[in-house]
View 1 (spheres, rainbow, N blue to C red):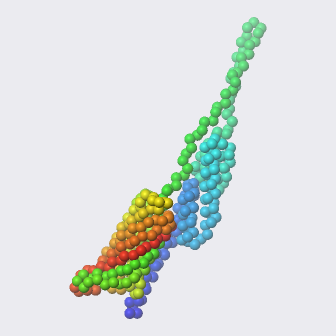
View 2 (view 1 turned 90 degrees about the vertical axis):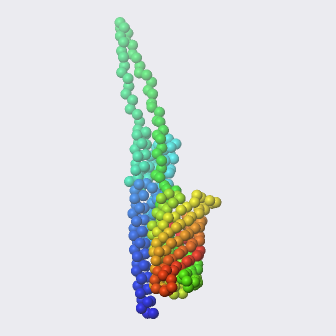
View 3 (view 1 turned 120 degrees about the horizontal axis):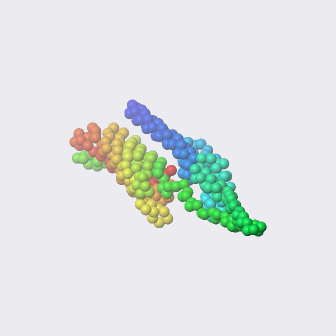
Length: 313
């Protein structure tokens, strides 16, 4: 029994180190993406990724978040002045924005346009014709100056901001029951199980995403199960108060440490995204097992039904 506990503890330590490495790598990616979004002038994207880096890495990013928020407010105000042909006010606001972010391409382009529109036009006087008749000199005065009327410049679109999050890190908790089906020997109830998992999802559109990595752990009363899965996740259009439905199907590999048997695993999940951060639903999980548990059944499986809540970042 002591040897079995040591082996299981070593495996849990390896899994924890792997999850910690994924966590740290994801945090660095969020910081790099936040800086790139800030340089491009996509301040909403920058704020979201600074928040995620702050959560994962535990570092204070309030100054960067506040700076991105100030730049975004300056950009909205400057574009409004530009659209209303108030070029002096627009020029001053773009100048303030570029002092905070000299790399903003949209602000620099608009500042150059304001400078060109505010520059006084140069109108050269027409030549004066002198007509001499005998001793009378007739001077033809130039026509009145006609100043060009500034034409409104078509406003470029603001930096594009996605209406959905392309990369999502999630944490899932749940509780349910798991049984063991052993073929000819019948089924056994393993009792209540606590469900914990982490996942990383890359969304292709507002309606379809890929759960690239989904690691989960289930256990209670000396029964332990570990699974690694990948699969697709679908989203419905917005329902009442922006509530969205979701469903996912994942497949992968898992191991039930109590029996020391493993095999293919798959999972069906459906529920509701109550907010962009909080989700709740039902899950059906099947773990096929191949091993020496029973001489009368070459393969058997364990099924789990439960409730699950998730947090998305």
